[in-house]
Length: 309
Length: 250
Image (tube, rainbow over the protein chains, first blue to last red):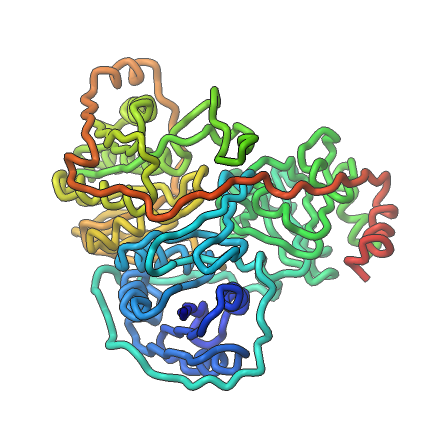
């Protein structure tokens, strides 16, 4: 048994989710190799080589992989992955983009968003916005899995000294090309990795009012999220969306402000350790999952909370 | 140009579903069904491409039991020109669907294939990408903006931390994200007209595609319940609880 973990990175920094994916790989058992595909990304491979429990790091360093174009990365991963029993990556927008292509090229199923490893061929994953937890047994020769990072505790980032091995002829399929990218620079932690998340919903009334959450986020070192309703209403961009079709978070503390608690939002945050809800509607469904509910007008409660922290 | 839009019949997004008592799946008896919301966005985008003079024909396709005809009729009412149902009572898995769509793609030769980014039942987010790989096409997934010019498709994609724009030569695949558009409602005259639009029914066998599942669902369980919380009366009490009881802030 052997597993190939496809690392997530931006050519200079290894994304923390890779450590969670490695934890899933460890739960499966067998040898674990890490693939770093990118452009001028040797630093990432060197970093991956220091992670405990990694047998070797495969480095595919070529301009064709620089922007993680799914067509190119999938061709590479399918080529390398044929030698393994398991191919894993994070269930992130990057993983979701290329991994299904890998599965199709290998002519096997993909099992998405796994939250537990029951056996090397059996996994648990949420369906219907987390309203059911399915146990899935695969009969494919290669198991292609995307992993929900928040469901696995990360492996330690140090303690290893794996060899780095250059691999792969460059595969530029020429099917797509990179035009540009707008990445929001933020001092705040990433939503899916933050220990504290504060999110606003439709009750925030407009995008400007989201600034109210910033003060608390600053004091608690929190990431700021939003419900789909707030994104739909155009208050904030989609990459802030927490929910079934947005980001799945599981911080130590989740503060829901002016969020009613639609099923699709709950799917994205109900595994948080402690949930606080602030809403003026005492019948809002969010209170059914909240450890601490405060029925109050958020425009008074939020500034008061900031002052007390 | 022709646009192909594969759509899925799913439980209505507002229904609170429950696991069957015997844990074999989700109980869907007498539950309201609908077009998957992201597929609806895909249909809307196709209609807008047609209104803009880019697309000339929209073909909606679905895979599933006979009752999927209802959702295909909805798509016809929303602006699709014709529909194809690949009828089967087998629950076809994403790779099987991708192979069926590929077989239809080979016959229909569309320039754009527009999928929803995920279905709200299986939550897999796979089929569009799998189809793109099988057909050897480029893909613009999680699209928030789509434009076509000079034989090129440009797609702005929602990615972690922001947006990415990619260009592809046609034919190509798009999967839709939430902000791409706001789907219209079908008007009554269009619902009436949709009844007369062509809806062809074929089988996976006629397409020569094997849809045998390669994984099995051993059980479906309800998620672990959260224990009931409490209501606090004041912000002071909330902060005290967080600090001294839950110990999540200092």
